[in-house]
Image 1 (cartoon, rainbow over the protein chains, first blue to last red):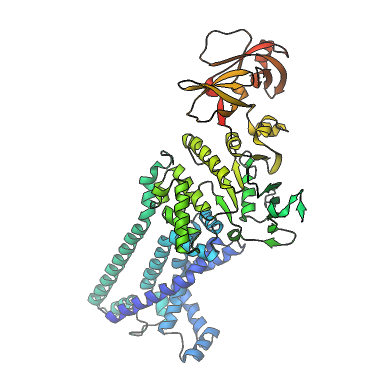
Image 2 (tube, one colour):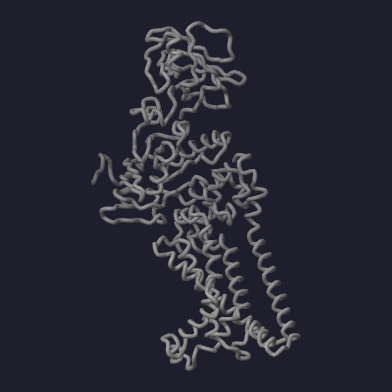
Length: 237
Length: 370
């Protein structure tokens, strides 16, 4: 079992979902509430990583962050080293690759918050930003959690993009999925099996924990709504 | 002092709205209300008449195509000058049809939501004051989903009143309630509105609500204002057939309780006495409402029947109303009956004919008169 690779994977996944939460939430808000005519174009771009083969995405990202590109050359000037085959480059690639997994559940959650609640908040004197944090976010906790977990899990499991952009540098860019691939390449099936099993169990535990938690978060009002609150109209005030 | 329509601009709420939707549907309305002698304006009309849109324009949830909304001289919105006050700063209290209580907050959280900028002590005082007035103090620690419809409405009203709004906008306050709760809420709301001394606009499609709550009433249909006046005046003297159709009740007369039976009331209406079902009213002055369809006409005193009201009278006027004939009678008060054209022929009805008007006590709708 390659613990260094697991550490790299976890670090990458945590960093990526953290960044995605920061970037994804405003984008999701825009997607949920904008009435621009060209919104569909943004939606299509956000969804692209879902359908593109990881090699295609990885290839373009590699070109885009290469030393001859604008981004790549700036980064070299600022950081003193190149983006390709570095952890930072991998974070950038993962962020793009997992973008729809973070944005779509969050946008769906924002979009399903009843418009009346938003308007009610405005009419109670609360600003748009205040309404976002006090009405929209609390009613979208499930979507936010789902977005974070899906992007985390998706980053943990990515392979093609990592190989294209990060290569397989031990302790830097060699993630668990790449490590398993290399073990299979050298016919070390026993090691591959152990690593794969650890990843499988870990992913399952994280997902179950989050889904269980997700359900608990909703319970204070959703269960009240469905159960005790059923007598909505039978008792008068 | 600048004036508008004869009254001081500083104490006027003035509305002149044109709202055109992309599909061509247009809503137009113009009215004004005094803000120093608060009253209740009822926006009345069938669904789709544009009442809620009008309310949303006033609240600042919709932009106008043309016109202006001014409160005490302050332009909340003026398309010509480009003035715009966002809904947050209009200090209107808006009661949504389905209340829109925040499901993730307890009732107390809902009440505190709009006053979190105030000092803590002040917030506590305001919440307990309003909660007590609306009788929801026992429910402050419950979630909206755990309350009945009537309780939810009180909580939503409390959330609005705790901010001490300058204007109240109530969108179909009774629509989400069952009939029994409705009667009860109607009487406490009419009491509350007259006690609050805040001008209020109430949207409804129910003429009984209009009579119970309104000091003034605007009838709307298909985006246009058809008539404006005192509710009883509008209901009994519709200026147009579409108003009559919209309000749908032919006879609205004042009546007084003269006797109380075990489960009925006897009322003096004009020179006649009639019997109505007593739903536990404490009042003794009512609007007596009778729909034309519920009145049966007889030319000879018929066999015994279960109908409690059998009033002798005289036909004054016959008018065709679609497939029916509207018969105006004098039975001690003006009463209108709707009968089929064939019945009118069979009974040989003509102005001056002697008839008996028969209707059940349960068909007499009583609305307490303020």
